Structures are given as C-alpha cells and as structure tokens.
Length: 239
Image (cartoon, rainbow, N blue to C red):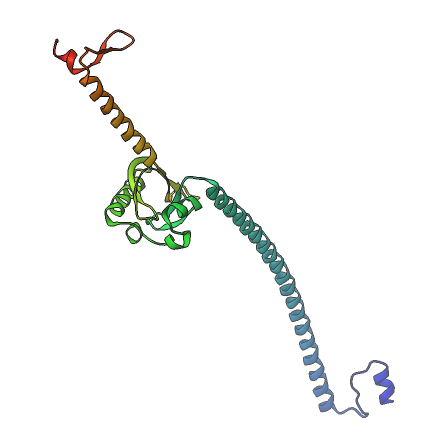
C-alpha cells in the first residue's frame, strides 16, 4: 500500500490508528515545506527579473561599446587623415598644447629641423632650441595665448645643419569642443633666398649708382609724371 501511495503522488503516510502528536508534527513540517516552496518561488521570480534586468543592461553595454568603438574608429580615421594632410604640406608645421609643450609636427618640419615628432613631443622650446631663439618663441607663444589672434612675425630658426635661417612665422590657437583655447598650431617659411635676392638687388643698385655717379655727363631721372626722382653727382653740381 505504501508503494501504491507513492506511485499515486503521495509524499508521506500515516499508520492507523493515528497518533495526534505525530499527525501535528507532520502537518507542521508540511506547512513549513509549503512556506519554503512559496518563498523559493518568489526568490525564483525575483532572480528571473534580475536576470532579465542584467540581460537588458548587458545589451545596453554592448551597444555602448559598439558606439564607442565606432567613435574611436572615426576618430582614428580623422587623426590619420589630418596626419597625412599635414605631411603632404611642404611647409614646416608644428603644434603645441596650452602649456607650450610640443605635441607633434609634420614631415617638412622634421626634414628642415632634423627632429621627429617623438623627439619633440612633450618638450618645451628651451629644451630643443638655442636659448636666444627659445626666449623669443616662448614670449610670442604667451602673446598668442593671451590675445588669441592670428600672429605673423619674422625671426629665425636653427636648421638641422646648425645654420640660423631667417623665416616668417604664422601661428594661431586651436580650441577644444567647449571653445576653450587648447593649444597653438604654427608654420614657418624659409626666406633665406628672399633675403639673398634682396641683398643682391641692393648690391646691384649700389653698383649701378656708383657707375652713374662716376659718369661725367649730367644724368637726371624722372617718373611718368616728369617729377625728378634721382640724379648723379655731376647733376648735383649744377643744382
């Protein structure tokens, strides 16, 4: 009979005649088991809800990671494009952060100055260039950071051979996403040939002036409005 009872779904059994103490004890146990089952079901439902919540959070995090990876990839493409663009520019270009520390340069700068972006990154002007030049660079950087206006001036740089070359600097500030000054970007043009040409023209003018002054004839130059613009020594003797 006991086995038939279990086969029918019974979970316990009692012998007749019933013992009240045993009956009460078994009832208490079943009540406690029922309470534990109800509690377990509640905990299971809570756990299922937590699992669903965690799955949703996992999905959100995965989507956020995907978006971040896309943003990083876009940023990397932009950085690569800008780097290639700078390297394609034949003019030496450099850039610094708001504290005046170099952050990089293009190939033209490297070829002219004999340093790589890694050589200058994180360094100040006084760590890289001659003292008299570094002092001027620093002062001009401070003026630009304070005024935030396009800056152009003539000065000099020492190239990779150690020669001081006359150049014209053109610099400006760049800003972060909130519009705050984040650093300086600058470029310079070597004007050595221009200076040499100007000197040759001056020498040629002096040479021609000496020739004209040495001539015994009176020579007077006028413009298209017949105004006298120049004359030689012989002409000066009769005025």
